[in-house]
Amino acid sequence: MTQTTTPWTTDVVIIGGGPVGLGLAIELGQRGIRCVLTERYEQTQPIPRGQNLTQRTMEHFHFWGAEKELRAARTIPPEYGIGGLTAYGTLLGQYNYDWLQRELVKPYYFTANERLPQYETEKVLRQRLAKLPNVQTLFGWDAQTIQQDDDGTTVTLTQRNSQQQQVIRADYAVGCDGSRSKTREQAGITQTLTDHDRLMVLLVFQSQELHELLSRYPGKSFYNVLHPDLKGYWKFFGRVDLGNTWFFHAPVPLGTTADNFDFKAYLHEAVGVEFALEIERVGFWDLRFALANTYRAGRIFVAGDAAHSHPPYGGYGVNSGLEDARNLGWKLAAVLQGWGGKQLLDSYDAERRPVFASTIKDFIAKSIDTDGDFLAHFDPLQDLAAFEAAWQERSAGAVGEVHAFEPNYEGSPIVHQVANKAGICSAKGSHQFKARAGHHLAPATLPSGKNVFDLLGSGFTLLGIGNHAEDSQLLSTAAAALKTPLTVVLEPTGSEADRYEATWVLIRPDQFVAWVSQDARIDAAQAQQVLDLITGAPSALAS
Image: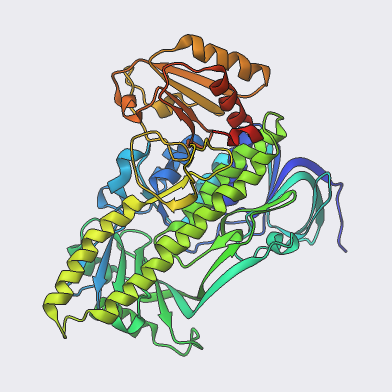
């Protein structure tokens, strides 16, 4: 017989305890917000996905107090390297180049990138979350219904083992419950789907011999094979650990099952030679893109795969989901603590959804189309010189793609808009040290030897370069009167901060720049503008 316990009340209920839900719970918990996180699985699931963590994602772990622990959990020794490689025809073929070398943009971020299986990442996040007393976790509980009214949300959970029920009443609910999100469906949020009509296999296998074969590619942990027959879709290998465990994604014929296909022969074909291996897991997924048509429905939000999903090309998914968590987390906290206007919550959709739409269009889908076009027009057996010239051009272009992926919020309603400049939120940009409204702040070492990132507050931070104490005091006093968190950092000129090319930089809680000024002084109009940006007031839209 099902039993329902006394309803719990909290500020935010998070449905789904993968990396995105865990990250959001930490973000909120560190800000003093009461949360309940519910996850249907008691233990992390040993599926090697979501491995590539960008420098930006590692900044999240730094601010969540878990960077050191995450790096210690990696399954490949740091000295081995975590780079990628693209090969033509077979993995051991004649033609290859470095791919997705994210270390190229390291100077623009405070932390280095990392690589480890998602289940190891989740373990670290669970350990960090356990140290936050205002976050309650319910592992092994499945959300059944998610409802809302004018005053809050109601979530009904069922414990998978006992069938006991629990009702949670919260001001807001966030669905981080994957691509088949119940939260999204019950909130009435629709999706735009783009189906590529491709069945993909995920193999997990053991092979020491493959490790030995790939010793010719030092410092590489993932490998992408382009083959003319696949028209731009990849055969993709990745290391789970060093020397033994691998995963493999590739297209297979429609109707393929675990029993009617020779997967060992397929792996041999992809590598280019036969090698000893033992398959541990066979899974399938459909290659498609999905993007929610809104990330918010009243008091219900979606994040991570519940908001957007795509093929695991380039490691964009988990990194985008964790950025969702940072973006939404500080805004929910601001509203719940009373210093942020409710329009802040609308800005979550306004910023994050177009960025992911751009990620699909300008990077993932574009990559498939570009690869397919290359394979259709260049063949070393038909015109070797033309093929080699095009291959060399692709090699150079792989560097440019890393620099071009720079998610930004230039068109955000809570970022200062420059007069006569129509900005848009996009994943496509450029990495610069110059401080630009709507863009991520680059690190800078100060005369004290500290980095700007060491001095950022948990709320907004006003960086003044040139020690304009009088102007900053004006803002500090006004912010305190509004009970808005503002940290002021004043530094003299003559350090790396000069490359910001600004006298004043207002930095959001998620390390994006909200406002920049080259003026020596802050007048009353600018001061009001800064305060409006901090609180998310409508007048922040004005130039």
